[in-house]
Length: 80
Image (tube, rainbow, N blue to C red; front, side, top):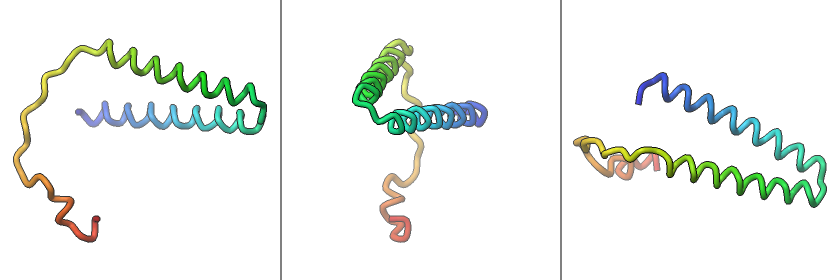
């Protein structure tokens, strides 16, 4: 992946998290049962849209396997 694409992906993720947090905060502030139900239905719709988008993507062949130690992180005790 290019740096530009990763930066765009990070920015879109941050915007999505921000919008979701604002929406959830508003629903918690309202505190009505119907608001919670709408939040659950909205979440289900978002997951369905994500699944539909994923199914519409073209298949991509796997890239070549990189060489090197496979379990390097498990050997690093301070990291674990």
